[in-house]
Length: 482
Ligand SMILES: Cc1cc2nc3c(=O)[nH]c(=O)nc-3n(C[C@H](O)[C@H](O)[C@H](O)COP(=O)(O)OP(=O)(O)OC[C@H]3O[C@@H](n4cnc5c(N)ncnc54)[C@H](O)[C@@H]3O)c2cc1C
Image (cartoon, rainbow, N blue to C red; front, side, top):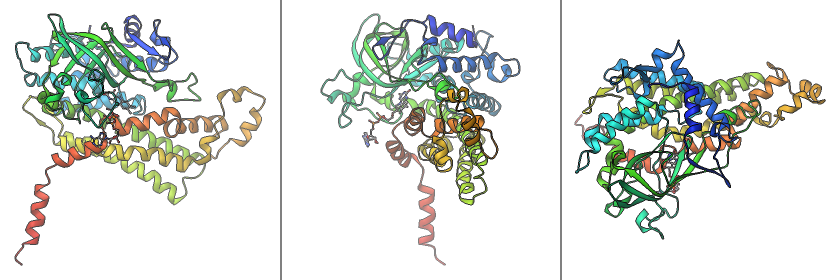
């Protein structure tokens, strides 16, 4: 089959049965027509269409080594810097489509599985061939161009104790039994963005470490979302109908769901790690999956800052505020952030090397630095938009007023230096959807947390960073004989 287009994506979405709960409703009809999903379904379909577009096809796909079909470039196992550059250009093209707002375009998790398959020997064998499982799974999702979601974190019941020490040891998803069919899982995981995916990956956290007590929780597997007993409980939607009123929420609300495993049987060929805390603790780093995921994330983040820089500059120019030095200083802050994120990507690629798994791998030092800096930089984007947009962010009446008797007043009093009323309101609604709407609130939380708890990430970064050369230089100066 190979790389799909939007129509195939939508057909698959609507024909895949799944237990998707939205409030009291179990969505049984077309997911792509449901008010909470239709905007994001349309956007995802447009992304898949880009893969088949004549001018983009060569960038967005490559020839599958097994089927000879064109398959998505995010599945490409890079062997050279040219391959890496192709991956980056493809990821940037998808990221620019949403101004970097969509966090879970397929390339994020495709990159992870791509890297893990190259590192298949890490998964090993113990009577079962986990190495073959991950390789087969990679080829399966590549050839069918499946969209993945993932869930890494246990429910937020009591963070003061591990999963086995909770009041109910079956709250966090865990192994219940093993039989000839596979491994039975009971419990829940939070959180999975994009429950409209075809498949779900259940993997260990990139940050939290497991001990021997956590044996039944130390698992990694993949399932189709149609697996019996698998349930997704969605949050309230931030989607809306009007692209004028909610330019981002109407298009890009990916939705987040808690995932429940009601005695779900994972077939043996979908199991990658089983009751192995040591492997669970190392899988993300040891396979370089985290490097390739973080590489994709940094490309996407750079695209987002560029987009916000465009919005905030237009906002300032529209109301003639761009002439003030403190406004220029704040916009410069965003421009500096854009250049910082792009520099991380460039450095990681310039310093890329072929690692032990045979892939041309971006240097993790700049990429891990980007991963740790981003939760600190991202919230400032909204702050600057609010500081410059000010009350203009509230002068955003619903679209209907443009067809009402109040239109002459709107045209007169909402006009701005460089835009008529309709255009100015359109722009400021976009700024509000980045900085202040309920959709924006979710985005802010996402950027702070999607790659793990920034506090524990910072401790891990401190422990991992090689500070020795810096210390040595200081000691040398302290004891220098003049
Ligand atoms: C919008 C959004 C989308 C997401 N999508 C996904 C997804 O698709 N897949 C997925 O797997 N995850 C997803 N996540 C979850 C993300 O992985 C977690 O938010 C992140 O790992 C932090 O975990 P937590 O939210 O459970 O916070 P908690 O671990 O509950 O932390 C709560 C607070 O307690 C502090 N804390 C807790 N434990 C400790 C400790 N031991 N030491 C020090 N401080 C501690 C934290 O610093 C934090 O301030 C998403 C999150 C958001 C907000």
